[in-house]
Structures are given as C-alpha cells and as structure tokens.
Image (cartoon, rainbow, N blue to C red; front, side, top):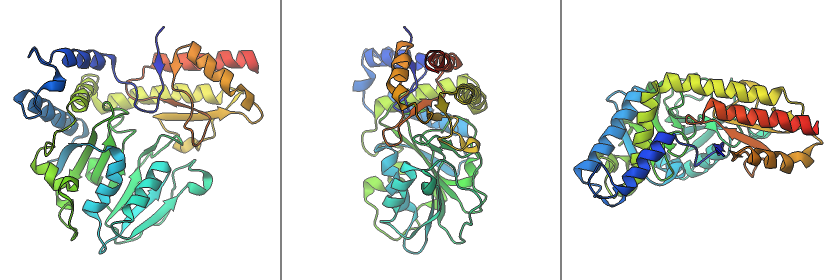
Length: 359
C-alpha cells in the first residue's frame, strides 16, 4: 500500500530524488565509490556544491549582492548566528513573534544586543499573523518567521517597512516566489522542501556583514564560510547532494511559480475537506493566515473521544504523520512541494468516510 507522508519534517521528498540518492550511496557517478566516502574537496563533490548554489540563485533570482551558504546546526543555530553577525549594542533587532520558533529566535538574539518584539500573536495562541502594528525607526533588521509549522499560519505578504528583513523560511522556502531584495538574510533548515535534515541554507547580503564590533568565533562568522565556499570544515556531503537533486526537481517541474500553483491547489482541497466536515474544526489558524504548507485542524468540541479512531483510519489508508504537534494537539497535514494532489485527496476521502461512520 502506498504511504502518503503528511509529516511536518523530516518531510516528504520527490521519489526520483530518493532513487538517485540511493544509487549515489552505492556508486556515485560511476566512480566505484559511495558518495558517503569521497573527499569533500574532490572535484566530483565540488561540482555538486557549485550546482546546488547555482540552483538556489536561479530559483530565487538572487543578485550578486548575496552569498549562498550550506551550513550545519539547523535553523536553531541561526537563531543566534544571525544576531551574532548582524546585531550589536549600537543597534536594535526587531522581531515579530508568531510561534514557537520565533520565540526561540527572540530568546537567542537577546544575548547579542537590544531586541524589541514589535508584534506578537501569543495572546491568541499564535492563531494569526499580526498586522497593522507600528515598526520603530532605526531597527538594524526586522526578523520574521514566514511559515509556522506548529500553528499553521503563514505570511501572505511581507511587512510594509523600509527596514531590511531577516527571515526563517525553513518550512516554506522554494514553495513560491520570494522578493529576495527585501532581505539582508534568509535561513532555512533543509528538511521541509529542500532536502534531508543535516544542512541549513543561509542566504546573506554581503554588505550586511562586518558591522558589529564583537569578536565572532571563527566557525560562527558567516565571512569564514563565504571565504571557504561552505567548506571551512567538512560539509554535510549527503544532505547537500540530496538538496541539489531536489532543487533540480523543482526547476525541472516549472520552478517556484509552478510550485506555488501546485501547493495552492493542494491547500484548497485540504481546507475544503476540513471546512465542509461537521466533525472537524478548522479555526486553529485564522482563515486569512492559513498556511499553504501546514494545515492544522481539530475535532469539534465534545468529540475528543474520536481522536484515536480518526488516526487509526488514517493509518489504514496509508496516511502517515497526521497527528498534530505535541504542544497544540489536534491534527496537521503538511503539504510540502513533493506531496501530490492525489495524496491529499486520499486524506480528504478518509475524513469523509470518518464522518459517514461517526457523525
């Protein structure tokens, strides 16, 4: 039986990518060696790293003002690296608090300079993206988290400000076009739309660096990795290769505009299945801020006893990873690039059959 992987991450990847990556583990490009054992400084892997960088630039339309880095440590390391490299006591970092990940970024940034939370939706359990808030003058940057996997909210438009932006795009990068010129820095853990866990993409504007007075440890200075082409130390070879394959797949399938249309069609089907079903409550996230990547929903009040039976029905149909995040409960269907519309239809059919049985 086919599995339909709705996990929030590590997440679904395209089937051709799995097949090519598996072959590379056995024998990389006919070398008689596994990708896992070749030198990261070999011309064969250098070509992989170069192509991955070119694909990022091509897909996002990056200008030469930006550098593309492939680092380790996950997006969680970027919570402090961004502030360490960009913020000092002479400036102030502005942050919009829209969920667990932005809250962690705020906590880490406070160690490196003044931080102002310019807006927050914490009081409403992060069920919406704040709007209409004043943005102070003089901010070094404004940090946002573009998609919130746990609560199922997503920015539909960037904040109206002249302040340059820093963004955690871990869960929606490469899912739609981005106005990259608005940003000083973008970071994203790979394990949603780009590749497996183990590599983090960082896109940084070169002229934003070198302006803080503090000593930055060599390994945590973006300029170190720029100078060494993401190979200051041994890079995560396999995750970078799989990311390169995935970006190839995105480009071959029409690029970011095609991904956006594909993803919006899946989200439309998913939210229609939620909203038309009398047993499910889709108000976990405000309607205008619903994520195209992560649809969150719950059972209606009084029918919590049906939680386990619904998950059992999902598993019987091959729908995996539908259980919501432990901090909010309920259900979550992640609809990343590699998810097919047909798989979303399977889950919608499960929801209908569930209601036929229990309503």
